[in-house]
Length: 62
Image (tube, rainbow, N blue to C red; front, side, top):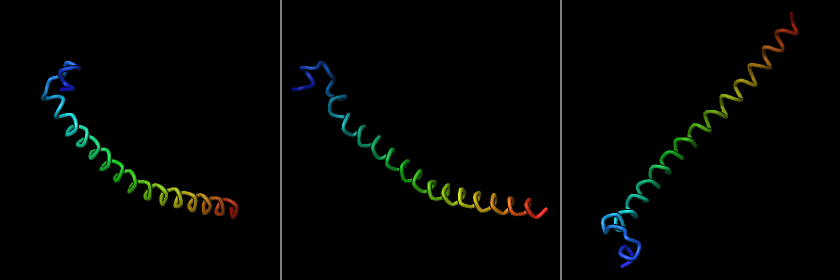
């Protein structure tokens, strides 16, 4: 038994794959949230560029 050779308890040895899978699911769900926010950030940056251009044009008119 590999757990005996490494002096790891059976509970830890057999439960680590489940813990690893749970951590992977949490990371994947966080990646989805980040991806959704990326689209919003790109839109906000474009809006900021547009507004900067409009402000520059207004200052030139003064």
